[in-house]
Amino acid sequence: MTPRALLSRLRLAPLLHDGHHLRRSLSAAAASPSDEAPPGAPPPPSNSRLFVAGLSWSMDERSLTDAFSSFGTVTEVRIMYDKNSGRSRGFGFVHFSNDHEAKCAKDAMDGKVMLGRPLRISYALEKVRGAPVIVPRLSTVRKI
Image (cartoon, rainbow, N blue to C red):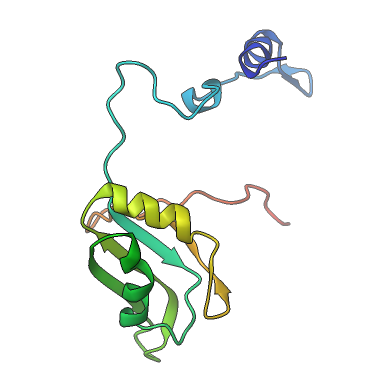
């Protein structure tokens, strides 16, 4: 059964919980069988800034720049440090001159081991000063 057929079957099936009918809401992302944008949709926003997690505490900006410079022009590197101890917090940001270079670096370096630790790389989110940061919950189960 194709994903599209399965989703249409789920939309038609009644959803009950303790004898009560529940409303169902399927997101557009879940309904789409692929990661491609629908025709006529605006292109995804560009992002040449990477979030790099899993950094060794001994990693410095120069070493991080050297590790990523083979993928393109690195315009800025920032490692985040603890205010009190001055020790690395284990993550940072790498900025490239364009989106293509950032994508190549992300694809090649995500999961690579550097100084004994695997890197986790994703596109950085834009932080708006003064705006609340909304982080999705990993679990909605509450312990009693």
